[in-house]
Every structure is written in C-alpha cells, then in structure tokens.
Amino acid sequence: MTLFQIIMLGASAFFAFKVYEHIQTLQDPAPKREDTPPSSFDPESLIIKADEAFESGDLQKALTLFTEANAKKSQNSDILFKIGYILQQLDKKDEALNYYKEALEMDKDNEYIHNSIASVYRSKEEFVSARMHLSASLDINDKNPITYYNYGNLLVDMKHIDEAKEMYKKALEINPEFKEAREELQKLS
Image (cartoon, rainbow, N blue to C red; front, side):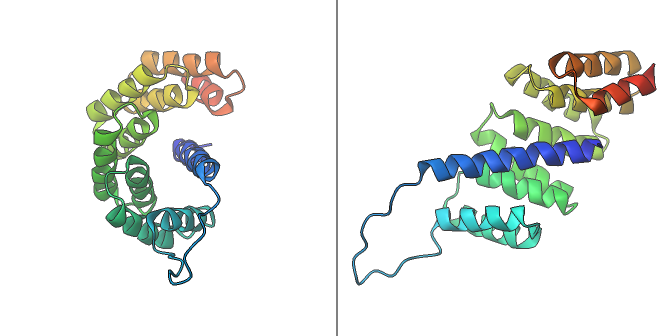
C-alpha cells in the first residue's frame, strides 16, 4: 500500500467516522407546519449528500455540495477538511492546503488535518514544513502508526535513513501487522 493509499484510507476512515458521528446526533424531526416545505438546502442535508457523493466516488459533486454547505455553515473545520481532502485528490494542492490551514485554525488539535497538510507539503518537497506538521500530529496522538509510517516516508525522502528506520519501527511497535511499514523497513536494512 502506498503512502497515498494509506492517507486515502485514513481520510476515508475519518469521513466514515464523521458520517457515523453525524448520524448518531440526528433526532426525529420536529413536526413541520403544513405551510413550510422541507428544505434540501440546509447545511446538514448538503453535508449528508456530499458524504454520499464522496463515498460513491463522485468527487466533483461532493466538492460542490461541501462548498455550498460551507457557504451556509462557515467556520466548520470538518467541512473545510473535507473540501481540502477532495481538492488534494483532484491534484489541486495549493487550494487544498489553503482549506486545510483554515480548518486547522479552528481545530488545532486535529491530527488528521496535520497529517494531510504534511502530505501536501511532502508532495511539494517542502520537507521542513511537512516534518513540522507530522511532529505536531505526534504531539496530539503518539499512538497512531500511520503518522509514524508517513514520517518514515518523509525521512526517506529527506535522506535521513536511520531516523526513517526508527519511525517504521515505532509504527510496527504500535501495530505489528502493519505490512507496509515492515516492507519499508526491510528495504532500508
């Protein structure tokens, strides 16, 4: 599994968790007055539709719906993160980075946002910035093997092989079944 696939897996898991979280908070709707038509344009409906579009692989539709939801419900770090993630998948790195940074301003302790920002910086070969965000992610949660794996990959790119080996070893300490980390460590031995 490549770094990109692992990041995709992590982001997909994050999206699935957020959809689950959202569904858990839904309540039976209050009785509507007869003269009030149901709205499919409220932010929550747009988010649900956007999540469904994302899960079905329609990134452009998901992006459009999340953007509309963001216009109606601004200052929501989850929406901004999702917009950034989709833009990153569409190879619009600079736009993605802007949305990630805006999301991070609202949710400074979100390890997924830090990991995503690091991924964009790594792809742009801005290794110092990538390293800073991976370190911040580890400060938030030092039990995430994917962060250690991503950090190891970054260190390989930076030609810091001994440090990369340590990151892969830490990933394997947390998750001994982490095949990709084991494979990368073996390549360096």
